[in-house]
Length: 332
Image 1 (cartoon, rainbow, N blue to C red):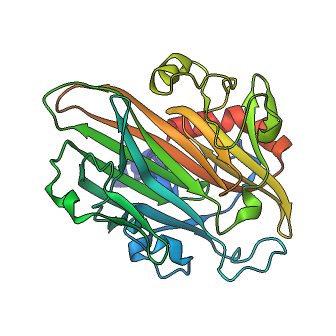
Image 2: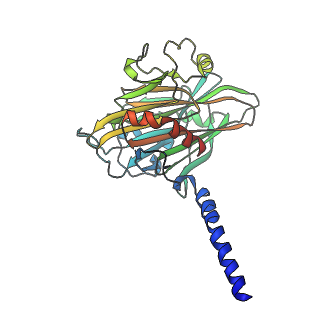
Image 3: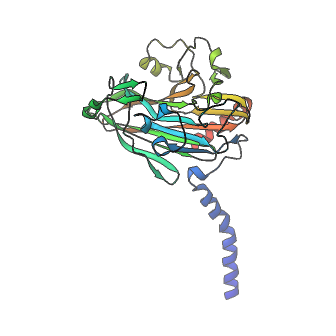
C-alpha cells in the first residue's frame, strides 16, 4: 500500500509540475520577462538612472536646476556610436516629465522629484505641481535656474513617475493628481527624449502617416518643432493648440528614428498609446510625446505610460513587427 501511495504521489507531481512552472513564469516581474519569441528584432538591454544619482558623464547643460526631472539612459558596449568624435559618451536623456499643462495653460518645468530605487525600478512620488511661469531664468554660465519665489507658490496638485529597463528597453509611467477643488480640463505632460549625446540616432526620424512610414522632413506642412496629433485625438489637440492643425495626423503614437552606424542598423523608438501628439526636433535633436490625461476631477489621479526602445533593426523589420510589438507593450 505504501509503494502504491508513493507511486500515485509521483504521478501527481509529474502532472502538476508543468502547471507550476507555467504559473511561475507568468508571475515573473515585467522587467524580467524578456523579449517575446514572436518578435525577431534584437533589442539592446538599457540601463536607466536619474541624473541626480548618476555618475555617467553628460554635458554641463544638464547639471542645473532641471536635473531632478532627468533620467539618463545608456547601453553597455555603446559608449560610442558612429564616427563622430564627441567629448562625452553616448547616452539618451528622458525628462519625466519636462512640462505639464492644465486647462490649456503651461505650468512650466516642474522640479522637486526625490528618486528612490526599489529593485530595478526608479521612482518618485508626491512631487508638487505649481504654476512656475515666469520663474525660470536662463543664465549662460549655469543654465536654467528657478527663482526662489517659487517656494511661495501654492501647490496645485501632485505628480509621480517611475522607470525601469528590461530586455526590450526602458518603460516609464507618469502620474498626475488634481489637488484643487475644481476639475482640470485638457491635462497633458510633455515627455522629451533627448538624443543630444547620441545625435546620429535622432537625425533620421520617421512618423507613420496613414499606412506609410515617412521621413519627418518630407511630411507636408511640417516645420521646425511641429507636433502632429495622433489619429483619434485631433479634436483634443485642436483645443490645446488652436490653429496648429496644418500638419496631418499620425497613425502610430510615437517617433521611430533609424540610421546606419558603425554598430550596424540602429533604431530608436519613443512611443506611447497614451500620446496626444508627437514631435521630432532635429535641431536638438529630440523625439517628444505629449501624454494625454484628459479631464481630472478634484482628487483624481491618472497614470499614463510610455516606452523607449533601441534595437539593432531596420525600419522595414520594425514595420513588419509593429503590430505584435504594440500588442506586447499594451499587455505589459
